[in-house]
Amino acid sequence: MEKLVNAIVVPTKQFAAESYRFVARCTKPDTKELSKIAIATSIGFGVLGFVGFAIKLVFIPINNVIVGPSA
Image (cartoon, rainbow, N blue to C red; front, side):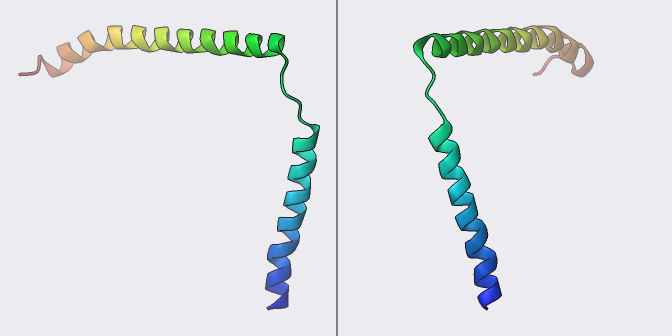
């Protein structure tokens, strides 16, 4: 029973200590860095949206030809 408790408690304590160390070293981004991240994310959303729209635009007519118009 003691081995089971040690097998659970020791890794949990080690994980908690490493997590605390990690969070303590992290820093919040400044305004310049945050704006760069926001712009990059926006561009990514735009590109993925355009790619999805283009794929849909191409495959809807192909699907209608293969399957036939739906009732």
